[in-house]
Length: 142
Picture 1 (tube, rainbow, N blue to C red):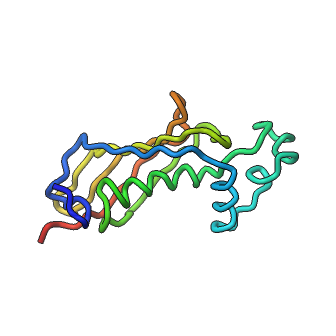
Picture 2 (cartoon, rainbow, N blue to C red):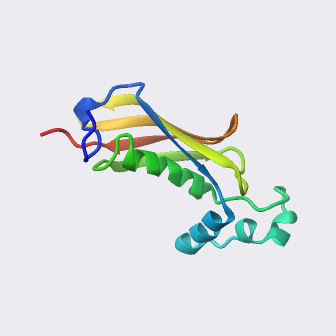
């Protein structure tokens, strides 16, 4: 059962999943560059990006990766959980106006340590742009 604190460890089971979808805008990329300090021209300068293998600007990989954080911090497991680790394998670029769907699925519960392992993926259409795994520390009811 979900409370304002998110799920408690006892309420979780393998196979539970959640997703979050967002269309990446130019404004998102510019704001992410400002807050992160990553001003690589590949993300911000169309002329520069045209000279790269991508031929046009791409979003920061970590911008799409942050959508995974959106899910684990607000939906599953939700408020009160803490990241222990996250792996990210960047497989394809994300462009302006791409719709990114991030999804997480619980694959393992460590009863002794209160840790939850989740398969994490971000997709644009049928293309996996990020794959990884998250491990979260989830509060117990007592």
